Length: 102
Length: 202
Image (cartoon, rainbow over all chains, first blue to last red; front, side, top):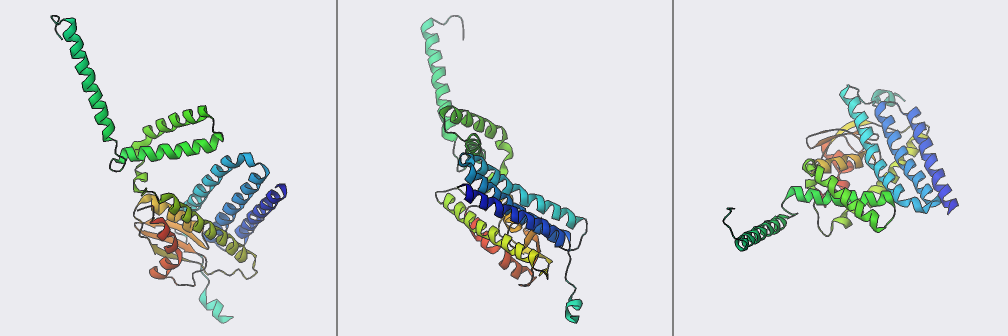
């Protein structure tokens, strides 16, 4: 049980790490939000699952935390994206002529 | 009530009062009709969901916890039922839990795919993205349905809900190669969720 839990926590932290890497590599705010939201949601859920394997009696509370993360995390990122859109930020697009030149 | 009443008539009058009162109470109870009265319907839904959250939070099934939880949940739901118009659009019947579970399954698979997809994009040295803002049309009319649809779109592969205007969702799409116009984007992004959400939402 402990080992399975550790594996899930490891996967979760790996996804969180990828999310951080995505924040650095992506070209504009929308893509950064994308990388951040998805990776942190699944990463947090996976860590929670691992904790549930460590302490099975915490399962109901962990379910509740997972539910709130699933509800709030996309709302938060949508709100940031909406604010960026209203501030007039255009999304990054790959310039077509550059890719043709190559 | 005049002073000339004998005790017998007074007793009789009191009995009539009690009878009328009982009749009114039972009429009130008969009025509880969760199909047609939105406030009572909201009250029942809110009480049940708050009670489930309470049970998850306390994590035990002892009698005292259940009783306190029911009382608190019912009181909170009663206080707030006037403002919970968002719950009016749930379609409740015997099949609802099955539809919700099926939707959660689809959603979970999409969430996993979203993460693997994002990991692949972030890790590959070329950074294979082709982002664009596209519009998606939804058939869901209710605010709750649009909220859940927007959340699902945000958490699924390569898409992020930016804004909702009427029944059009603005979506930021990392890989917009399947097509940028309304019909193609709707088909690629929203339709599978919409089909499942429509089973239990308007």
